[in-house]
Image (cartoon, rainbow, N blue to C red; front, side, top):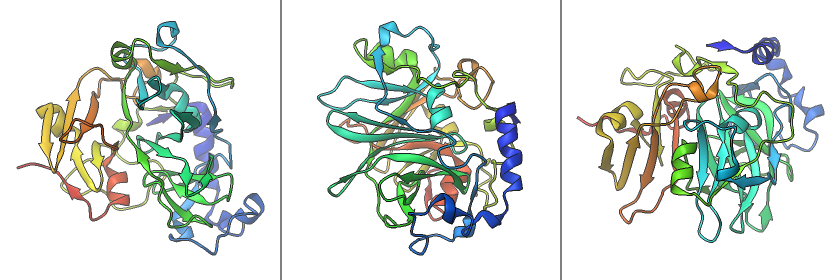
Length: 322
């Protein structure tokens, strides 16, 4: 992996931050977080480089018609939300790479659209917990190389890959995962000619550049010290996670469609990797996935790196076929 200069600096900074910053050093930055209430060992959490909100989450973004979008390449990845009663929306990965969380409302549902580049994990959550509507920010910390989010209302910490509160008042609370998927802008536009796409945020960021050049071809994950996946699967191989099961993307690409364990997973070519070349639009084609139930309804899922799946579902089922 070759980090672009901004992330090379963050990487050096993260190595300089010892386990020291935990937990005593967190108290000043997180005065309202209850560190006594937690479900994980605090020593598993480490700085990713930027501090709290150093990667700024977005709130209530603006959208434009897909026909008006001229900056985004056809093969560039977007996260798609198609909810009843609302125009379909696309959230470009070129923006989420630099912001990681978008707090939005779609069809009356408050949502958090999230992307952790280090795990290739793109998940959309319902922001409602009981009678509360939470809004989320980026803590700047990682656990098993995955983003630790926080909610601004209680300053509890949440694990992005599993949508669960791990530190603070919300420890043990699970966010509801909503159906969304990553596909190319061309695929979204072809299916939704009247759809909407998130407009470029008003931040000074080199949108369209991948700061993690060659990351998904690396031998080891960034800032990860855990156990590697079994069965000879490369740690940065992509897998499709549905619940606690994982299908290797390579197997799905060979089959193009599989029906197993009550779900149908389809793969088709035509979407660039967001973690390959510096020009995000020029990344190699890794294809796109849809996951549906027997009635044809889209199901929540994630296309993540194998090491991350194994870290968070160590007893999960690897769907390797024969």
